[in-house]
Length: 412
Ligand SMILES: [Ca+2]
Ligand SMILES: [Ca+2]
Ligand SMILES: [Ca+2]
Image 1 (spheres, rainbow, N blue to C red):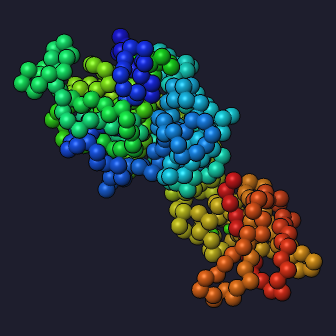
Image 2 (image 1 turned 45 degrees about the horizontal axis):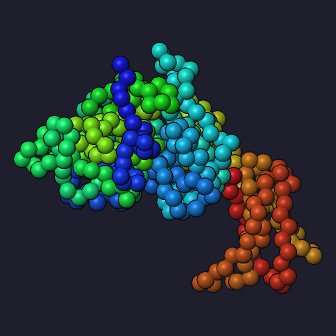
Image 3 (image 1 turned 135 degrees about the vertical axis):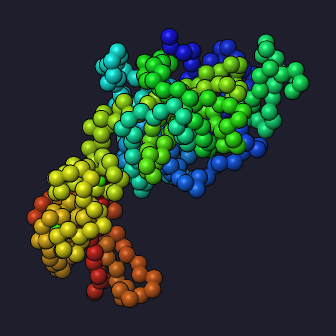
């Protein structure tokens, strides 16, 4: 039987509430306000963002999304459906959502194979300066410790008590214990919990999906957490043999009473191992060992998706394998590397190079001496120019008598 669940993103306003809104990952310890910066053993704090509705901007924090790499994020489909996100903020930068990129993930496991799920991928237009994440390839197990990171509501400071009939009461006569959501504040927060059950097939109204769950309990320690409204799309991380992996995406909570995290309640998260192949097929430059080199590129040049070392210069041409990837040159051919081929100074200056059609280029120049302490490089072309093979060139208008020039290659 499928559990009764509630999406984290929207409350059923018709049923409740005097308060306008509802819960970040809510933690049991202290006043509940801590854990708003990356934990010392960081599972991927900087990769968890928050959706923005309307025009891209910093205002209007909504539900969560997790940056996977190669400009792709994952979130709950109900976030997409309800919020129509146009921006996502990670690390205080707002990126523009490419609305054409939304890709709903499908069940791969019987008995629901081929059906829509409550997970979607989307791409942003600018390339975030963030690491890729490892995605777990097998399900977590009951008893595994996880770290949850989300944007949901905070909690009120004090522990509260309810009678068996869910009326608030004092501690002495209380049957249930927990925290009310503080519906006026939410922030990115991390918390910990232990997987209490796996293989929970559930339907939250956006398709059936296999979830694992955690239970909020009073003996869980100061960082014990339960998700709250707006934690949808937040990440759940598991440390496997020393490497943090994204194991789940938070989708729903059950509630014993309205707008509260009661000890005994449950958070349900999609088991991402079911979707790893779909994700790696969608992210063309998926990088499973997160060394900066895509799997396909390592396979092409080292016959294995993870064999090549990014920091090694395999062909001794002076460029590491990572730099050869960035420049789209051949890391096994010492005659292939990134350089300016020629420079012609007449009316304008023309920088000629061998350019990849999969990369974009910019020329910078300076009229300073290269030994100057505050060297100022001026962008010759603000709009990056696609490479065009052997006769790629960028023309620069610079009236100075003499200048130094340099060429930059960018991943698009
Ligand atoms: Ca790699
Ligand atoms: Ca090299
Ligand atoms: Ca080379």
